[in-house]
Image (cartoon, rainbow, N blue to C red; front, side, top):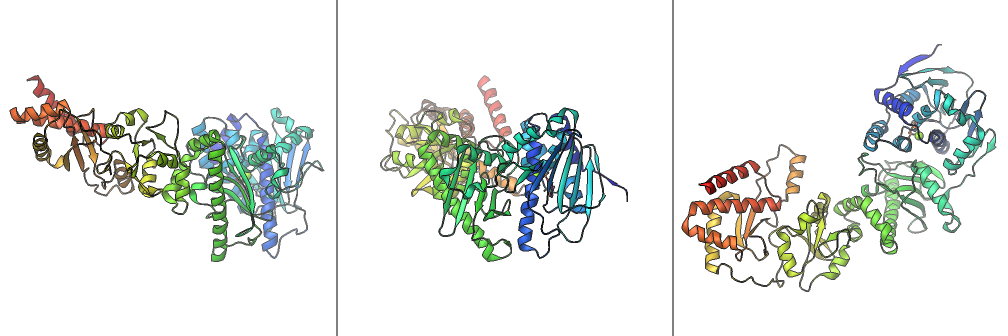
Length: 614
Ligand code: ADP
Ligand code: MG
């Protein structure tokens, strides 16, 4: 039977093109990726031996053999793992079996470079072999009794071939025929160096030309005292397929309520924020050093998806089943132990190393906020881990909510915040005037998610969150000094009545303000009105939905000269007074970010300008 030819899927062709033509740095990572695939295949086999009755070639050792030939310019990586059937070869090496390839392409576009650092993280590590290969040949025989050997081959162009191969043992052997400029990888010393770096934590013996190069160890089961910092760092690099150091890590074990060993890492960068798409779980589940699941769903809450690492528990059955309620419950229980301990770790870090914690918050604060908004069980701890800028602190300094609460004024019942595009805009907004007058602190938030956090969480330490751009703040007992020389009560009320009737549908309420100092007016949403952000979100979720028009209230500063003049004008010339009133209201809407009708606003402004010129 002769070889059959297949075309690579379009995305794979793109990846190959990039790998071959534009990834030049750190070519040696192909060794890490092929060894990691061999190790994965052995992990799967070890698991099958425990759960399946029959496995082909049962007695083969679980090991990885690497051979180099500097005459032939080849390097071969061979394992006795699960192997692949013909269908699996097509599926795993020729098509996008997982979303990894797409994510990788997007990540490459987003980062512009560093592809060789990224390639292993997106489930396309195999193709890194083409950085150095003229031809890659894969010999493989599945673990299933029925089945046969196959030979897969490609030069990284648009296609590959598959044909039967005789006399193969179980598992896979990847033979890389090196390109001229990559000949160094056929030298044993060169390969040994790379293996030492990348493969110290492979849980199976690795032999290079017959000589073992690694010591098999499960770092997470060893006592902390005996582990060097570099070992932690190297293990992270191996596990996360990354070439950068982690930001911090937590290594712990507990015996109750169940026995758990865990080693959890926080990466130094948030790839999701860099536009690399949503991450999956990256904490693998082991039972006594045996991998049960690489990315177990439901182990950790969604907001912890940035954490890398391993968790090992003897209490887990090897043939764990998602369908069995008791197994699911067990996974969740382990997850709760990890989550609680990790939160405690963050609390400690926040005190012990504020600089590092600040870095953590800048990179991963978003995830904590997501947690605070969605995870009711851990909400209070998550809220206390958040940090915000505030009107009481210099630019760049952050406060926790507990510190805010400690600084609250006697009689203050609410935690005030403002969400907006940057510090300057918030500092100068009319909403701050009354807060400054009263000496009240306001948290400055620059992220749409902040509003969702406060709206969902509602309160912290029994103090309600209140957005300072809303009407109905509880400022009882926090009166600001009364301004002098304003409109008298009667005149003020007259103006309010008139404004309300003339602005009509555009306004919900008009009031004399207790919160203005320098601005003549301000526009506010009433307490229970959905915010601009919420309204936008409602429209995004359901474009069909009729979102009711904004219901805004107007507050006027009776002590302000503009308001006093408006009152005079009202007596003389109602028509002009209305033009001015509309301009004031439009200005207030602009300052509050509440403009929903820019065309109408522009029309009113032109009309005003025309009148002024008369
Ligand atoms: P990933 O390892 O992240 O899934 P790769 O591109 O490295 O992505 O490998 C793609 C797939 O090819 C693997 O998921 C696996 O199914 C298969 N594969 C690769 N190498 C081996 C091997 N040595 N033994 C068995 N299967 C393999
Ligand atoms: Mg891989």
